[in-house]
Amino acid sequence: MMKIPFSPPDIGQAEIDAVTDTMKSSWITTGPKTEELSQRIASICHTLHSVCMNSATACHEMALRLLGIGEGDEVIAPAYTYSASASVVDHVGAKLVLVDIEKDSYHISYDALEKAITPRTKAVVPVDLGGVLCDYDKIHEIVESKKSMFKPNNDIQASIGRIAVTADGAHSLLAQRADGKRSGELGDFTSFSFHAVKNFTTAEGGALTWRSIPGQDSAAMKKQLSLLACHGQDRGFKPDSEKPFWEYDIQFLGYKHNMTDILASVGLAQLDRADQIMSRRRSIFKRYDEALRDIPGVAVLDHFSPAGSSCHLYMVNFREKSEEFRNEFMDRMLELGVSTNVHYKPLPMHTAYKQLGFDIADYPNAYEMFKGEVTLPSYSLMTEEQVDYVIECFKKVYGEMV
Image (tube, rainbow, N blue to C red; front, top):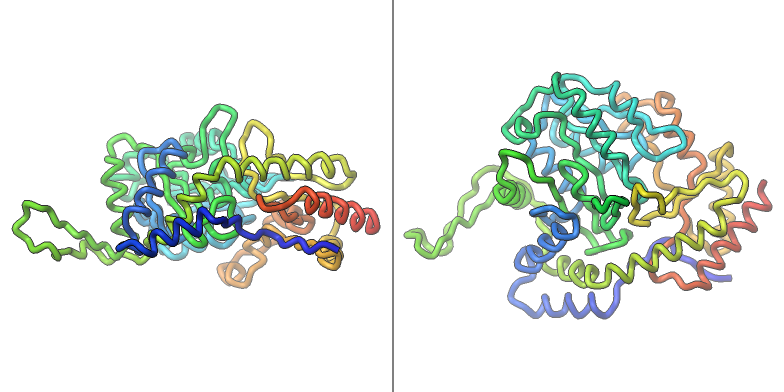
């Protein structure tokens, strides 16, 4: 019997050497490596700038704060996502509005999104679940159609002139649509996660990208976001200044979300291997597709459509089956040594969101997708023998249960 873990990180000698070099340098906290990683992320995403922080959650929250979103405002997010997509709305003092997902899809319901918009709506949070990109053209069409009721809070909101699209791209770095556009340039702001289980990792960390906004200086936005992420502290030192070299100023009471050069070093080495890592993941996903796509009662997430995908999670769904069926399937797979997971338990099913007044009964599509969802192990270190074994176990267990 093989033992197949769910998602170990692909860390090799290149990452180890990069961290060692940084540890031996004079700079291990936020410094040149973090800035280099930020620049490379921006280049990959076809944006002018990005800012690396210590998590996608921090990136998302700092985007909302840069937009001036807070008390009295509303932000719309899908019920089917991880808590990080939504908790930051509460953190900034705004009202979270959850909507259902599309039927037989993991993406936000576009009709529900349109109906949920009010004059208080300041942002919408599309979630690229599993790495498959949402229909951003449709989302922009919706927010554009509602711009007459939009009331901006600050200059950036006024320059955008409508509800901001603050995308949760935690799963979708390197995803590219058929038209060449990439995750990171499709929303007004996009938050990426570099957590250990992601395709691209810095152990912990994330990055925020944003599209150029007419009337706004993108470099100035980068500086403001960097200040937000590190106490609002500006060194302000210039060689020709009369101020002493140590002088700094706390311009406002900011936060502590900066990335370190140690973590950025891991990320830079990962980017050097990104093509290799992504090629292997695509190969595994195609193997799974060939083996599982035509099994009656089993639906798989389409990672090879023109919509674009980063091939982050291989999600299967047992249509018309119960939550108990799904759980028993996972238990039996584990008995055979195969670790699986569920992505995700909808937010209205969690205590914290129930206390906010949300009820899963109001989100039938989200529950329907959740109760049959299983995520199979898929990571760049998997061997062909391991992929074969997962497929063999899947067919064996599912065949015995139906």
